[in-house]
Every structure is written in structure tokens, then in C-alpha cells.
Image 1 (cartoon, rainbow, N blue to C red):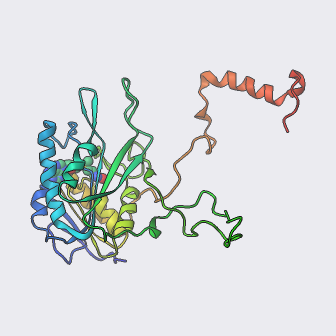
Image 2: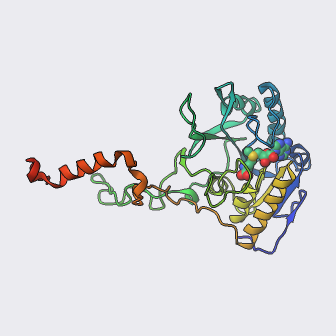
Image 3: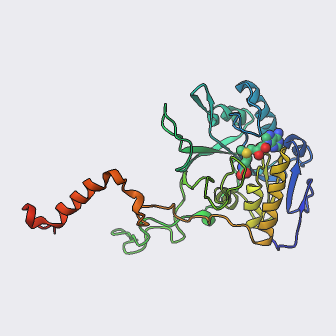
Amino acid sequence: MLGNTYGITESFDPEARAVVWPGDCLDLLRTIPTGSMQLVVTSPPYNIGKEYERRLKLETYLEQQAKVIRECIRALSPRGSICWQVGNYVDQGAIIPLDTVLYPIFTERGLRMRNRIIWHFEHGLHCSRRFSGRYETIIWFTKCEEYTFNLDPVRVPQKYPGKKYFKGPKAGQYSCNPLGKNPGDLWVIPNVKSNHVEKTNHPCQFPVELIERLVLSLTNEEDWVLDPFLGTGTTIIAAIRHGRRGMGADTVPKYVKLARERVQQEIEGSLQTRPMNRPVYDPVEAGNKLTVAPWDRKRTDLQTALFEAPAKYGRKAAR
Ligand SMILES: C[S@@+](CC[C@H](N)C(=O)[O-])C[C@H]1O[C@@H](n2cnc3c(N)ncnc32)[C@H](O)[C@@H]1O
């Protein structure tokens, strides 16, 4: 693992641990040697008019993305991975899932898709003319068949860890992997909204734990992880937390400052993040009283009374 005695540099240096480039990602990418990045992971602007982007015609947006993706592929190591985390572009109420229109940009350049990961979360805008959007995707591509994939560091607890084979030569032995199971391609991880511990004033951060899973499974210690659209520095934080090197660019000075501050806190061990694999808060399990709406309380009380007083209402006691 890395010590905490290193700083943050502004431009690519093969000996650096953390690079925050204040400017356009294409300018940073041009300085990166071919084949040197093990993982490129990013959430680009979605072209939906956020404060850090200018809304463009979809074709123009895709051309811009293609330029960045082409440079990322050049910088990617032969065993490396690219993960593009996206949601929907919305055009007058009609949605266009960005992964569907970005997919050919990767495959036309010879990349192979390994997973389309669904990232499900529970908070966001409430729609009135369609169902509220509660997932985004991560499309994961590799350059070749011999790509790095470490499953053990990202295994999650089994549903029935004590389950055993009941017949055959292994009868009586545990049937599941004691290290846990494959996390699958549906990831339930809270998004960074309102009172999430990682929330800053950036409108679209992804959570550190989302990127930690990709860093742990798709890279090895000392490898480089690159995020061309860095925002608040999440990718670098996930990378250096696990002994990798992290690098990224952002054009907006206030996000560059924020990224530097957060990376510095991570280096010093003071950055607060939601721990990986913590179960999602369940208000019913937590005994929160607000899970029953006040206007429903009367009916619920009546049902409880019926249940608790079988004699009075002539119902046999439940066994
Ligand atoms: C969706 S946000 C990424 C947020 C990031 N994943 C995080 O966790 O904070 C996209 C970011 O790309 C930045 N950006 C937009 N165009 C850029 C460009 N050409 N080069 C570098 N950064 C850019 C924006 O300022 C914005 O912070």
C-alpha cells in the first residue's frame, strides 16, 4: 500500500501517485504515453444542461465523446479496461439511454463489452409523465481477451453461507465459495444526494464505493487509473485508497479545487466516505416510525386490533 507522504501533481509524471490536471481532458490525454493506463473510468457530461456543460445537438455531443474515447483507448494498456458510467439524455421528454448510442464508438474501435452493469439507487427527481429514473449503467469494455479481472477482492456475502451439498461426492461440504459470491451486474449503491456523507456542491458525484469495486477488480497495486471527467476527484480517491495511482482532468476551477482538497484529505486519512458493502438503509428494518403514513394509521391500528384480539372477533389463534 502507498504511504501518505506523497503530494498531488498537475501533470502526468510516471512516478506520481495523484495527478489533477486543471483543464481539458484531451490536453491531458495527449501527454499520456500509449498503453500506460490500466483502467479508464468516468462519468462524462450527459449533455442535459448541467452547470458545467453546454447543451449540444446529440450528434455533436457524440463526436466530442468519440474524440475523448479514442484517446482513452490509445492510452489504455493491452490488459486494461474502460468503464463509461452514464444515464439518459432527455430530448423534450423522450429519453435516449446514452450507453446505447455510445456503445458503437467503443466496438467500432475493436473493444469488447464485458458487462453492462446496472447501478440502482433510490433517490432522484420525481417524474410526473414517466416512471422516475432509478438506475444508470456502467458499460465495461476491454481491449483484448487477456484482461485483468480479480474477483476475490470484490466478492460479497453469500445469501445462505452455511448451505451444503446434500448428495454426491461432496455431500456435507459447503457448496458456496467461503470468500463470498460474485457481486453480479446489478449494483445497489446509494447515490450521492442530500445527506450522503460524501456530498459536496458538485451536482453529479458518483460514490467512492462504486469506483472502489472497479478499481479492486480491474487493476493491481501500482497501476494507473484515469478519469478524463474528474469532477470532485472520486476516481483518484478510490485508486489511491487501494494502492493504485490516480489521474484526472476537469475544466471547472472550483471542481479542480474540490478534487484537490478531497484527494489531499484521502491522503491524510481524514476523508469521510460511505464504506463499501454497507447494506442500504431500510427504514422498516431500522424501526423508523415514519414508514406508516399518518392517514393510514387508523386502518393499520384496526388490523392490529383484529390480529391481537382473536377471541373477541371469533378468529382462531394463529399458530
Ligand atoms: C458528471 S461530472 C463527473 C463527476 C465525477 N464523477 C465525481 O464523482 O465528482 C462531469 C465533469 O466533467 C467536467 N468536464 C466537462 N467537460 C470537460 C472536459 N472537456 N475536460 C475535462 N473535464 C470536463 C465537468 O466540469 C464535470 O465536473
